[in-house]
Image 1: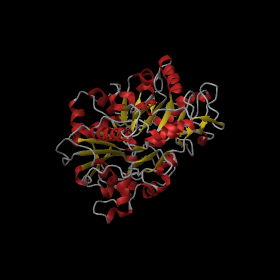
Image 2 (image 1 turned 120 degrees about the vertical axis):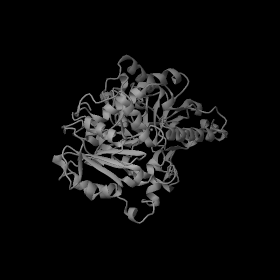
Image 3 (image 1 turned 180 degrees about the vertical axis):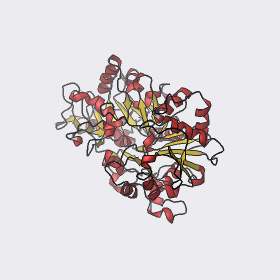
Image 4 (image 1 turned 90 degrees about the vertical axis):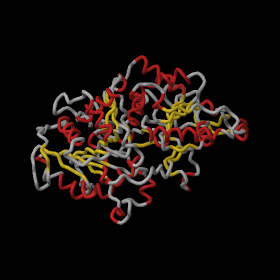
Length: 498
């Protein structure tokens, strides 16, 4: 759920030692605290930055699949240091640092990082699970920057138009503001980390909603022009790991991503589409023209029974927003004898556009015997002990085990028109069940995301028909031409992208 009010809202070898005697270009920050003159460079001697002065933070998640993938990433980083002579760097898994639900939003953890690493480190480098790092090249890239200054480094993204997911920020010129593509890695110098940590301590975080973390982190650091803007680092890349265009890159994306076995069978996913009478002739036909044919088990839930679709009236009155009563009725129906028993439940809106074959591939990585709640993760009040939730428009995926746990609890809707996704998030938080994020689900339209961000994705879903041709959007972004010919529904290149 996106709020309607735009205002609220991943030991250096001896051959490096000789570099300390060779002049290199070091980009120096401005003497004014909190900003840099990015156009000025001067030749300085290498600062002799050691690998152990870099703290790696993998933006990991507590789901078992993601934990195992993050552990492999940590092992790869440490293996690269085995042949080097310096002390290996700290490599942290974000999900395991504290018990705070909001740790994934990074900002609440800044005082923690500052207290542990502020005295003996120079850089904090954040990685997503799919980020591949060439440690020696990253060290060389960081040595270009004066570690005594405040630096915010990354691969820049920008908006082509003002967007609701960024609260319509910079509406007059959206492309002027740059924010990091987390997949390429991003970094904070320790002087900047320490100042931001003090800011968090002295002025506790107040933002209600966490929607697009990478943009919100950049806004917090920029501080209305008082702090540094993002500095582009060409060595931070999102090219595939073995691409010939990635020879200069310190970071790349792991391709192919882990394929965890055969795709989940369509007969093992029950699809629930939420609709209402006024959209039976407007939105439901789009579902039928695009992705319905890929579903084996699908029901439309409405406030009106229409046998031509057909729809099912769950006895819950339609509401203008929220739909909590309807969603909980769907959960109850899912575990009843009224529908076939499946391992997975997908709940979508009638204006959700989704690729079910790609979802089948993704779900092969998850264990339905675990309480899995998967989709695009948002947060509410994370700086004040709030909770995470799967935003409903992009699609909410639940394992049967998760639905059983939810309904066995005392968690209920406080009203039929309460925001269903947020109420579910509160319930999951109370039960101690993790919300699992996938950036392949999208709450908004393709136009609402940076082109460069979508360029290295094979998306699973988008949401909203506003000001677009939804069938054309589906055909461009979500339709796989080989679905009808490939035995598993996807061609090889799409599987690799997932």
